[in-house]
Image 1 (cartoon, protein in one colour):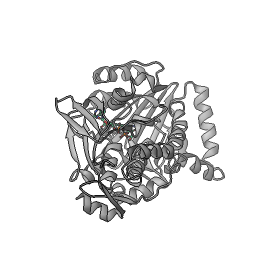
Image 2 (cartoon, rainbow, N blue to C red; image 1 turned 180 degrees about the vertical axis):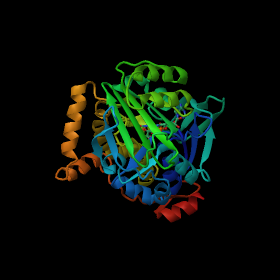
Image 3 (cartoon, rainbow, N blue to C red; image 1 turned 90 degrees about the horizontal axis):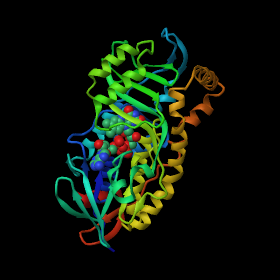
Image 4 (cartoon, helix red, strand yellow; image 1 turned 30 degrees about the horizontal axis):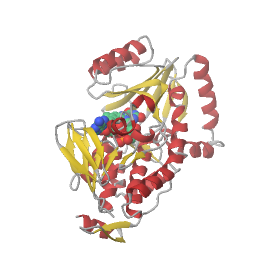
Length: 415
Ligand SMILES: Cc1cc2nc3c(=O)[nH]c(=O)nc-3n(C[C@H](O)[C@H](O)[C@H](O)COP(=O)(O)OP(=O)(O)OC[C@H]3O[C@@H](n4cnc5c(N)ncnc54)[C@H](O)[C@@H]3O)c2cc1C
């Protein structure tokens, strides 16, 4: 059997570095190529629940995550006068532990940078599969051979396009779009969030770890939206035009949007594929099963990384068996996440006044004491859909697969 040791990962977001971590623990060597020239350490808050918390602990990063947690309190739906209509406890929006995506990206990068070859400012432009490996051509001109290639490059994955076909074939737009950015906290929020709606638009603002800043999310109904992903100025104009005339503090937030240098803009979209691998190329995270906000995408990407690396080790580096097992384990969870994420647009930005009132009524009922347990179960379904399990570590000698052992032995071999 060929010793599957050199693995190229496209994307240094969440899934990519998490996979680099687990591959290292199992004795594989990983290179991560990231299109951006720098680590993209921005984005809204992401949370972990149930099995995913066990995963953070197993990775030894729980304390770092906890130290940077948002410690978010209630998220309150307000009316145009800023008066509360309904409050969600932190368990609903923020899970057991919540952290800003950028802080998590930084923690994962820092945890893996010593033993992972990170290449920023480059991307894969050619993939040629042979019996023994994959020949990869990079935009920068380099050509190199790898045993396996993993596309962990997000919703608009380049690896998916090269290995499986155009994005349009797999992307299902849910009909809403989101603009996320940070702004000065001149709303005076203190570990709390506000959600304000006008028909088809949701304005979210919450303070996190840094009390001087707030995270702002502007969600709006945008069926069939076409936009230039690289044109930030046009994205800002579109959002400003859509939210013009919305009340509460929206005008002030739009002023901050105009100056924001960390805008994240995208449609709420999902990725649906019949298979996540072809030969020696496999997809992970949003690239494979993007669910959109509310679909537990971050925790699932990290759990997927653990399972993918673990199955490779368990299968003695037989990638065909490992990819099949990985997909068998993750697919039901990904489906659950997609079911959960499907309703995010309609929940955050209901289409008309009647739908806004209906949402508020339903959630008032659900957040009552009696329904609390059901409510918690509902929000943790995707997070608990894959149980965390420990994999035996593959101990790889220089020539071929030698034995299976413990994680500590695996790390010694890899070091
Ligand atoms: C900057 C940023 C901000 C985000 N903010 C939010 C948010 O506010 N709310 C939300 O719901 N989700 C957000 N997301 C998406 C969220 O991070 C993912 O849904 C989830 O964490 C799964 O992570 P992932 O690693 O699969 O994908 P991502 O976190 O999207 O990471 C993918 C990585 O691949 C890189 N990449 C893309 N194309 C290529 C290529 N061709 N070659 C090499 N690298 C490439 C990207 O630059 C990125 O670093 C954000 C993503 C990014 C990149």
